[in-house]
Image 1 (cartoon, helix red, strand yellow):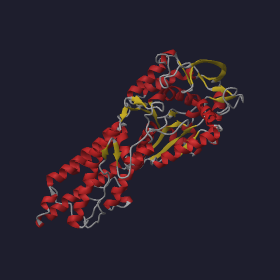
Image 2: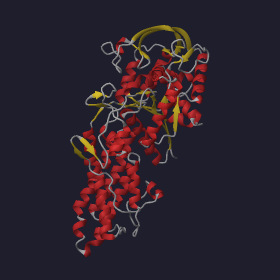
Image 3: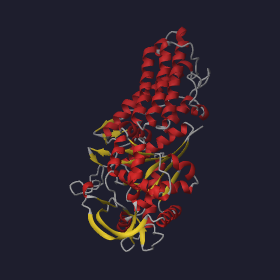
Image 4: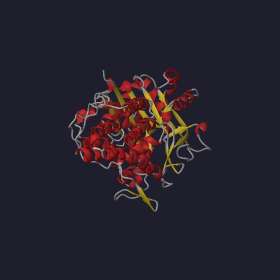
Length: 530
């Protein structure tokens, strides 16, 4: 029976535009969703924008427009960018959506009625950028570790959620479920947080200071703290689509490491207080840096995803992001590393196999597929290389090791390119008596391309579609992962013309040139929320 999975990106805070970090998260989630859909699983991918809080109000004031106008514009930009780079989400949620507002107020009402929300005094070291309190221990040289700014001392009456009441229960759950937070290093970090006093969570802001937020349902003088509001999107988004009961138990969150505490501490306690089961997985990735420094607008070292796409093609960018970063660790972006991946892996590996195979098919057989059998040891070894790649890919992707999964496919592609060198069809073809053997060799190469395209479809969807068309396969046959080696191409099947999947990138004076493309540029930094 097919399984189910619910995949969520963080909600992106709409104080600026998308950059490489948010693009990586969405590419990972999109690839993971496509991977599970390809295997027949009921898959739902949610993304969206977090639109309340102090920084949004400040940004709107600076822009000279209302918060509603400001968030509508930036949220539209996010959605447009994700559509443009091919993120196949099932629901795009905005925390200003009426259904989300109602859901948050309903949850607050229920938790308040249970006695887990109370009124008290709020004081501490507050970072406006993070919109949360920090303890002295969490600061780095007295500064917020994310924004490197000094928190301000604040004190005001507010509503509190009895978060500490659920601390032991959350810690016990994490200890009993080793894969609840992945990779394991972040699980250890979360447990360390939960072994210290966490206190209760201030979940309101007085309207005298901040009006842009969801009004507290039991006190119209306050709005809801942005994190308490935004985290609830993961459930409200399903509720809006009538999928909460069947999909929430299989929720798999993907976040950056900067928001581990809110998701590993705040969020589980909120779920328990609201009477919901905990999510299945919290998957945490590292930062993309540039020149060894975290990307920021002030340093001018952030990268716009659309500029990368326009210069190199989106599948090349997807491949680089997934192959270069080991999920959970940090990675450093350089344009030269991207170009190296394109030339060495995509052009010389997959692109070379496709162009050579299709060209020889048309040169020797006018594009008509020849019988695969009888087979030799070389043929059997080639088939086994791709069978192994399929097994390894599934193992690695389910363990979130996307880079290792792609590496497994490229080992098989290397085997296919070596197979052409070893069997030398271009030499055998000089002897008419050897043409049946040439046809069998090229049939094996076509199978290599078919299986490669199938395995890569979740990660390089446009490339897989171009290969499917070039191989002359209908969508149903291409989608069948159960086809045995040799079953896809009956004798006499006609393939399409050769395709150039990934032209080599030549550089001149430090600027990348691909067709009419140019050098990539800078961008505006954003932050991730819930």
